Amino acid sequence: MGFEMESDFLVIGSGIAGLSYALKCAELGTVVIVTKKKDVDTATNLAQGGIAAVLGKDDSVDSHVEDTITSGAGLCDEAIVRMVVENGPARIDELVQLGVDFVHDQESSSGYSLGREGGHSHRRVAHAYDLTGREIERALLEKARNHNRIQLFEEHIAVDLLMAKGTIPGWGACGSERCVGAYVMEDGQVETYRAKVTALCSGGVGKVYLFTTNPDIATGDGVAMAFRAGAVVANMEFVQFHPTCLYHPDEKNFLISEAVRGEGGILIGRDKVPFMEKYDPRKDLATRDTVARAIDKELKETGEDCVYLDITQRDSAYLKKRFPTIYQRCLLRGIDISKDPIPVVPAAHYMCGGVKTDSKGRTSISGLIALGETACTGLHGGNRLASNSLLEAVVFADSAANYCRGIWPALKKEPIGQVDEWKSGDARKLSEEILINHNWDSIRRVMWNYVGIVRSMKRLTLAKKRMEAIYEEIDLHYREYLVTPDMVELRNIALIALLIIQSAMERKESRGLHYLIDFKEQYERAHQTLVRKKAAGKSWEIEILMEGEA
Ligand code: SIN
Image (cartoon, rainbow, N blue to C red; front, side, top):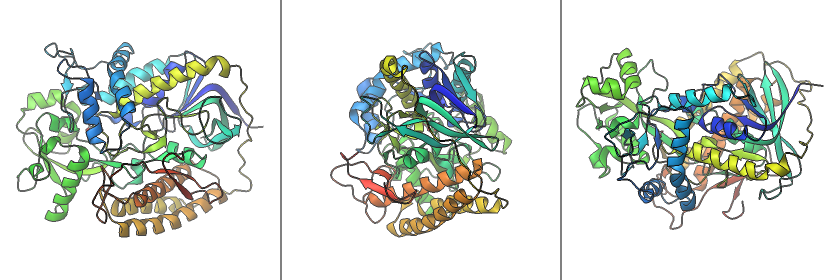
């Protein structure tokens, strides 16, 4: 009999969504958080810009709603957008209560120093200079680590979800099974972590691409596990590329925050000529889809490797204070941003799609919640508005925890369903790491070259063929060899790649972040791309659902 963990709530991931939700659920029962690397290895920790909310007296809910919907290219769920925006100020207050130290400005009507980013018609981004995510993560982790009902396990990677018979009454899920936790691996052993409610808060999918602003943990684990368990997944074709990732041979994923453009930064070519006015009347503060595409076009036309972000009109004292991390990091690379334009390129940044949820964070599987970048809630539509993601995470964490509070009197009396132990059968130890490394590299190159900012049906078709072959090989290894964290991640990015490709091929239009040169027009009626695992198919075979079917 192997080790077995049992708790009321299982939370997979330790970023802002997982920690916020865990802290609230700990008021109800016991919480186990598993995170596959160190607890701070999250996208939250790297977030620079901040968290958007209606805080200034000159701002309004309607204005933030309108900016979000405009950015979302006709695909946002207006009721969800309104719910999130209306909840923003209360959630910011709560973060402050939890110890988050946003920068204040006594001259601002909100009392906070508010940043501006692309697509926002007002200054509304609360920040801790360019270390906002780190400050939020610090405060939330401190609370979680010291909570007597929360256990946090680092270096524990979730492998797959545990499913058992039965559903939670009123959940509105499809199917006759419910999620009762996850298989979790630590030190080569896979154990069962059973729970009444499981929350996927494992972040995004950036590592599917060769170049990304994301941390190494972003391998789409939550979406992949949910898909394999039969959950409905939505809008995976909407991959957001951040326009300005530092271009330097010694930098892997360093972001130059959009807040730099908010404070006057201008995109220029090697010839020093600004180019955004050719593409959008909002120029450098256009939404990200437009700016990233404009840079992509400039790079293709000029044959250059990067464009430049020029903030030299601000003096060094201001830049050192407002952007301490960016200032220092660039200086380390020989770039004094008060004198030199910063070389930048777009890189994969954020998945706007994900596991489909309702307004309470509930997925189509009973007992399974998805939050943060793992979820597709209807807020971001076809293109996320800058700094709306941390906001979404805290609002939905609150909404999901409130829902759990409502069902808790009944749920706490129920036993957790029994499941089988993990079986390794006669699997052998994989002795050739090259089998993993080669496929890892191939997937990321195929996605970057064939499924990037500008897409074509020809390239998507080639990508699908290549990825299906790669997935078959990985799936075979997964069955033959003892599972390792690298193998779990590889299998997940391969599946995510297929979901992105297939969803992109399904959307025969150009909308928001999805730009398809064969179909440049938009459908008259916007629709979501909903996919689910084919019931009787192979592990990756995808069924496309019509809206209303899910
Ligand atoms: C940034 O600081 O540019 C990133 C913020 C975001 O992705 O919303």
